[in-house]
Length: 472
Image (cartoon, rainbow, N blue to C red; front, side):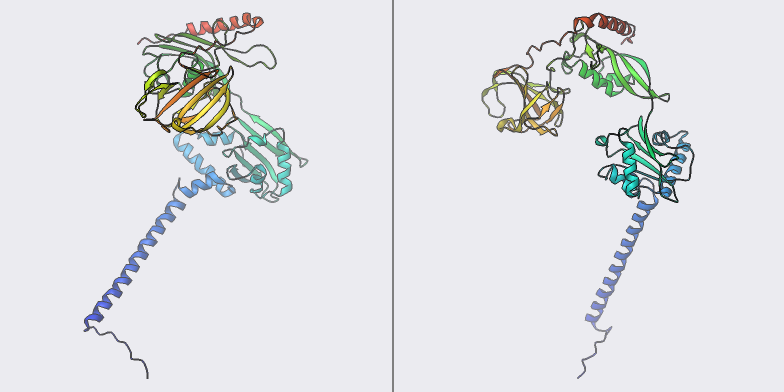
């Protein structure tokens, strides 16, 4: 018997409800499909047709570009530079080590990011293994293969017919490129192209208004110079406690120019800080005679500025929240307890530096001290750094550290009511107040060098004295 045929009866209420539901489902599906297609269209437009998009940026930053993409990028860069009335920094850098004329080469550009070594990066340009080996051989003695960085860029110019390399350039920095070119006999030869900087003396002076960094910024000097001054006088000046508004600083520094434009700063040749609390401090750069001699900073008496310990292991902190005390009331334990150090309140994540050269005794959790680093120094001195948020990379037991090297970051681990650094010091097993510890002065220059140093220092001192400081 055939199965009964199902029909739709408009007069039937149940059939009408089922029909409405079916139409609603179809309508919802169509609306969802329309929204989906709209979103796809927007993404296609954003990713493929607009500038500065994620995919295009990734392509530019990541790997290898063929000739068309390279030419498009060059045209776009030239157009932008023309619109601004100049040449972009990247375009200027590229022009330094690429031919000015188009020789019809197939141009392939890229950078080291994502490639495990130069051999792999060159292989990605579709050069055959013999060509790659020849390029690497030509670079020996010209490029340190151990110093390759992900941000380093390179460019290959290939013969479009044979796909053989005509020219390869590797940019190490804005000043240094290494180039490999093919000779007439077919061999590849490498050479270094280093641009020379024009160095001039720059004289800077000002008064403290706020921080040293802010005071230098007001007169148009980079924060990098402020950091050098903080380091230079960090053995004699507590940069949190000592500076006062109106204190005077003077600097004679090398200013570097590349093709007539400011490039950076060279050495500080002389510096002076005169303060109400800090007193007057001067530093002069001097390099002793000798093949292996290194330059350093000395005061007017030919004594080395650098000392074994810096005053504080933090360059920036809010205040000293607790001092060295035999019976301090502990804010967590709620009882009186010996406080064998000094607490520096500072924002979480503030870098903590080694007070002196030494070896890491331990870098681990230590009960109430939280994350702690202990350093062993000469003279049976141990310094302690407690309540750290985290350790700096590579800081572990047995590692050597240099003075001012970052060893951790301010935190509030262990028994702490807020972010701070507990800085403690032991000498031959006995705790001492690190703020009152007598830090021996630096060594004197050898006697045969002192007369020559005094001549150099006298000339630089006249430079400092000749700098005028604006009145308040």
